[in-house]
Image (cartoon, rainbow, N blue to C red; front, side, top):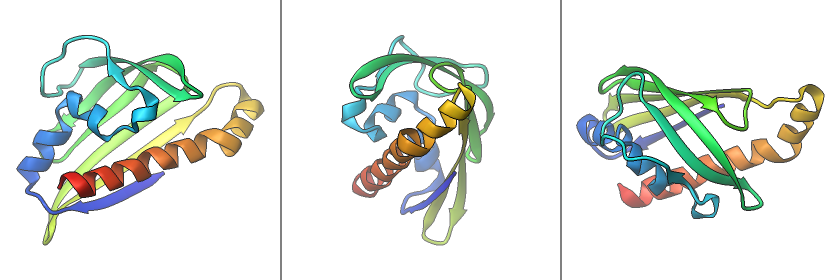
Length: 145
């Protein structure tokens, strides 16, 4: 899945906002009850682990741990799930200065466990939930910036 959006801000402002792990809660739907579990620095770095509790489906809380695996300041960073509901979660966050501000592009690769059952659950429920999360982010970012 790929999601792109132009934000009318500078590259420095975009990087400052998105590289702060605490801002993730600002762009996550409130119904997901997203909570970081431990105190973190306000800027990501390679090798950083972030532990959350989140309720993606029907209010059931899930522990989720991601690792920031790559960071190229003002250009991109990548987070990958180390513990959580997916068998694969690889999320790339790209930033590019353009005429009207910053082109922000999210590239998301994920899969669920349980083979054919996981693929069916993805088709019926999870894919739409993921799309709704990114639609919410688009709306909130338009309001913020």
